[in-house]
Length: 429
Image (cartoon, rainbow, N blue to C red; front, side):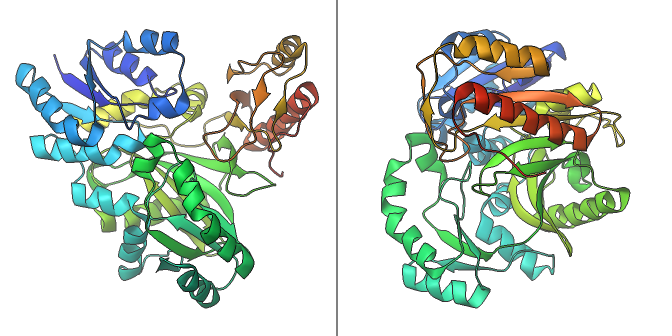
C-alpha cells in the first residue's frame, strides 16, 4: 500500500487526509507542536479529532524545523514513504527540505526557497527578463524614503516572506512610509508564535501595480505547468490588502487565459519548480500578468470546496497524484458554473446583538450557501479585522456565472451587515 505523509494542515484542507485514504493509501499525519497552521485557525478540538480519524497514524513532534526530518526518518524506516507533502504555509520549506534529504519526489529546496522569498524571487525574474514589479530592499526608514522616491508613490512595503498579508502595507505618502517604520517594532512583537517563525525581518519595497488581483492554481507537473483554475481575488474597498473573496473562475477571456499560462510557464521554468500544487497570486495589469507571490501549497480557505462544487473534481486527489508522480487530468474552462468563497471580516469590530442566531438562520435560508462557518452567538465580541487571520466566518455561494457570483456575494454581505449591526469588509463590483 502506497504511503502518503501529510505535514501539518489548515483546517479547511484537512479533508485531504480523507481523500488520500479514499484513494487506497496508508496515510500518516505529522502534527507540529509549535509552527502549525491549525493553531492559526483555532479549529475546535472535536472537529480536529474527526478529521484526523482518517489518518492511519498521527505522529506528534515538538518543533517543525528541528524535529521533522528525524521523525520522517523513523516513519520511513517503519513503512517506506512514497510521498510527503503539506497544505500548510509554515510547513512548506521544512517539508521540502525533509523530502529532499530522504530522496522523495519534491521540488528542490533551492527552488522552493527562491520562489517563496519575495526579494529573491523578484531578483530571479528580473535577471531572466520576466515581467515583475520593480523593487528595492530596505532596512531603515531613511532607506525606505529614498526607495519610495526612486520607485514612485504609492509603494508596497512587505517582509521578504510572510503569510496572510502580515507586515504588508500600502504607503501612499512619505508620512505613511515613516509611520510604517515607527510601528514596526510593536507589530513584530504582537505576532503570535507561529507567524513569528514565518514572517521575515528582511523588508522590500516595490512599486504599486495597478490591476485586478488574481490567483492561478497550478500543478507543477515536472515543469510543464497545468493551470487547473484561475480565480479572481476580491479586495476590500477600505483596505486593498485584505482579500474579501475568491471568485471561481475569474472570468478571463481565452486570450487572457493563454497569457497567464505563458507567463506562469516562464516563471516556473526560471524558478525550477517541478513538483507540487502552487497557489500563485498575480495582478492582471494593462501589460499582462505581474507576479505578486508564489505559495508552495494548494489554494487555501474554502476555495478547494468551491472548486469541487464547480468541476466535480477533488483538488486533494490531484495533490496526492502529483506528489506520487501519477498521471492526472484537469478540467479546462468553460466550467458551466461559478462560485464564490467569502471571508467575513468586521471593519470596526463590535458586539453581536440579541437574537443573532435566528437572523443568521434566516439569511442561510434566503441565500442557500453551499458551505459556511458562521458560529455566532448573541453578545459575542467580534474583533476588528487586522489581516487575513482575523475573519469571523466564511460563506460559499454557487452561481451560474462569475459576475452573478460577485453580485450574490455582495447581497449576502449586505444582509449580514443588517443582521449583525456593524460594517463588514466588502469589495466593489
